Each structure stands twice: as structure tokens, then as C-alpha cells.
Amino acid sequence: MSVFSCSISERKPAVVSTQTNLFAPLGVETAPEKSRPLLEKIQKSFKFIPNLFGVFANSPVMLEGYLGLEGVFEKGSLSAVERSIVLLASSVENSCKYCTVAHSTVLKAFLHVPAEIVSAVRSNLPLPDPKLNSLVVIVSKRGYLEAQTIENFLAAGYRKDQIQEVLIGVALKTMSNYLDHISPTQLDQAFQAEG
Image 1 (cartoon, rainbow, N blue to C red):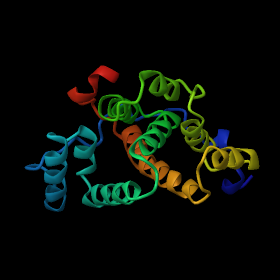
Image 2 (spheres, rainbow, N blue to C red):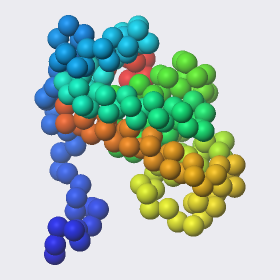
Image 3 (cartoon, rainbow, N blue to C red):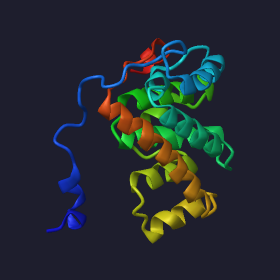
């Protein structure tokens, strides 16, 4: 059997995380020079530097790439709640505790999404809102969309091009979730209530 013909189950790792911090979160003073202006913007926006962004800062390319893609995602047609649901569903799908907790906090504390919606996403349960549920289903299919899944997405009120916007959110979370698997990130105090 060639490497290209292995099944998905054969590709799953025996260990989800290295269990060690390969990269420490960096601050403005300790980050590489090219990461510093980006961290300053993050600090101004959040009033602190979330640890995951501090970890990104170890690679100015990663930090700039993530922020750039995030900026593009925010310019799309999905609402802030819809984008955050995509990010949370991706984090749950990828088993990333840090991002699951962070996006749960954003959804509940800043976007005022009911706790039962957030809990349903985190528990892989159907959401009572068919439109939001269709976003979670798209994420959970990992790109293998059946005709019925697409029909349900369109029937919920989305356009077919918005599937591609969902994929941008998945790409963002793949970057952050995988990095958290490689180098587990300590939860920030701001996210502890959801942890």
C-alpha cells in the first residue's frame, strides 16, 4: 500500500500532543523583531497578549500569516457569530482545548450567544438554530460534503460560495489547533471560566 492510499484511520497519531511546550509564549520585548509590531496591535486590541498569539510570535511568518488570514475571514459575508461558531466547531473537531475555551469565551461573553448553543457545539450535539447548525455540519464533514449537506446549507439561507468562507475559518483553526497540539498552550486567565 502506498503512502497516498492509506485510510484516514491509519493516519491518526497514537499521541495527540507532545505534552511539552516546544514554544514558549513571547511578549513584545522578547519576540523576534518582525513579530513585535504585530504583538503590539494584539495587545492594544485585547488589552493583553493571549498566550497562543505569544506562541505564534516565535515565528513572525506564522503570526503574520494567521493574522492576515484572520483579517480576510473577517471581511467575508458571515456574521461575527457565524464566524465564531465555525472557529469553535473547528477547534472541537480538532480537539484543541485552548481554542475551544477561547472561542467559547468570545461567543458567550462578547457576542452574547446563549450558553446552550456553545455547549451543543462543544458536545457535538445538533444546534436548535438550523442556520448555525449547518455551519457546524460543514466543519464536521472535513471537506467530504454530500449533496444533502450542501442542500441543507443552502436551505438554511446560505449561498454556495459561503462554503469557501467556512473553509477559511477551518484553515485558521488548523493552524492554531495543530500548533497547540505540537506545543500545548497554557490557558490565559481571561479564558479560565470556560476551561
